[in-house]
Length: 94
Image (tube, rainbow, N blue to C red; front, side, top):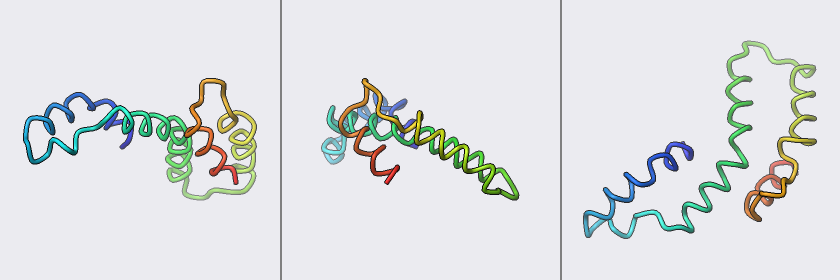
């Protein structure tokens, strides 16, 4: 859903900015930064959740390697991560 809002950001801003009653709801650059950081941190978790929910029977041997992959690479801090993205990744791992 966050990704969809980011894709449609210009259209959302135009629609909300056209009416005085909704102008204050238009996304600011700070809102966009937060949405982008959040999307970057949780996008892979969404894909993993979708894959797990498609399984009728999930076992520990299936989940354990994926959790290791999350800890070592997917949720590891990247140089291009913002502070918010790093904070979200850290909280997910804790």
